[in-house]
Length: 246
Image (tube, rainbow, N blue to C red; front, side, top):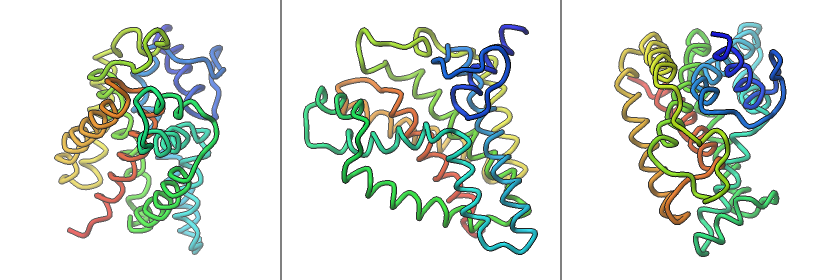
């Protein structure tokens, strides 16, 4: 139990701006810490939904933008940064080796700027279509589902940089904790809309297709930037699905 709590603290400290416990530092997490990602995603989503709901309840029209800002700010933009890097790296007309080099470049190019512009519009519009009464559970569901999808991709695809595997990819995540995260995700989706229960496997399948395409572009494997991009894409896709009229 103590080891699990330390792993949770490690995940929270690395993937959010909220340090917790003795491991309150941005040290790369181990596989056990990665297993807690769905819980971290649900917490971040719930926080963003709660703050935005309070704004909306007081008549503010800025609540969708507020939710979007919290979702990015609370995670230290770590996943968005991966998305931006992938826009530049994966769409580049270059060799797989060169694409891996581009992913490590801290500078962002045209593809990243265009990708972020499109992402921002879709993201905020998707949030705005969700009723305030469902916002907390909806953002929590999307955040948890996005991270479950990233974990599944980490299971399926090897790490792209041979000899540079971080502690997080030495061994698979904890199956029991990931299963609990999947159960939480499914429950959140069910409470928002029972139809979203079926969206969970569909979203994971789509993320695997995205992971397969990225691995082909990188010569057979994924990187942390790709996992971050998967989190962002599935998060936004889930919010779009929630906002579709039924």
